Image (cartoon, rainbow, N blue to C red; front, side, top):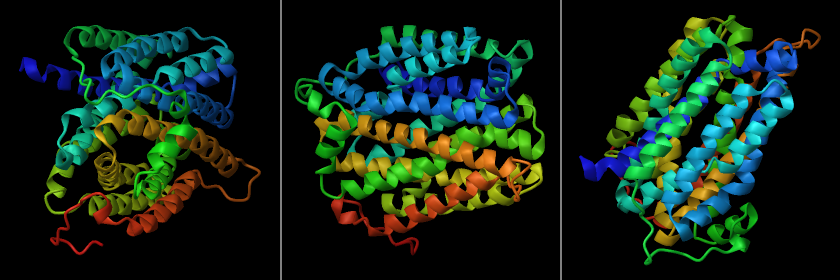
Length: 412
């Protein structure tokens, strides 16, 4: 059991990340309305800008953090990130001005390196054929966190809109303490790579990683599907309030339901489906159900259908870890941190653009003066992007990454 503690720790870290995100989602609309004295539509715009500011710093700093972990190791980078994550939540919890909320998001974005570092750690300890399903474990833990986070948020919100932030800070700090004692280093001298500033930025990292055969198209697909997926954290709370009249409790319950399905799909189902499909086929399978979910949320008008769609849309969660598995196969052992840093950077860029676009579309389509009332319009935007990704993945050659063709299904 003790030898598995490091793996347990990094997976717990992902879970805690998700708890920290999920615990504040149900109360963010109320917090923004309280601090900014704003309506729900205006609060959605503020929420989009806060999310974009966090992602902007993550975009700028993600490759640097990934390169630092390739040079100095996963352990120090991960522990420093957790410490500053706790600080970020404290700032958010005490904020009474919008500028303090922005400072909190900027601090959090700079040090939000845990996805890249955890991804590199998993790549370090995984065999090539196991990478996709082990990246699925990351998604499963994220799902568990998304079960617990919104539920915690809904419960603690009863004591005030600030309380969930302080609870998230305590959880992050507790995990920092655990990691300090149990996390070993996986970067050895054999795979340690010198830190170079010209590669420690999004452009330099993209240039060097993009030179690997077949990776440019995969990076583009990854970026676009993250834009589509980002509609959920950007819009869900505002969408639920506007379309169904949900309160923080129902928002938390809906997110928890999605988290349960996410944990099941990425923790077990992806391992099952990879027995019968290649990574590419699994990506296609995932993108198909992502699009179905987006289209459904675009048009439904009754909340029962929102819950019916959750397991359908959650099937799409196999796509991104399978895509990560393909890319991790192509990258060399001493490039795993750089690759994961770049993926974090691309995800962050997507989470800069998507909240601004999606909350703007939401604002437009719930405006009483606009001729069409359609709160689900942002999901239709994501459906279109998902269809583009579905088309692009067809051009990926399995020979580029050593994927073994399987014939159980007729996906191509």
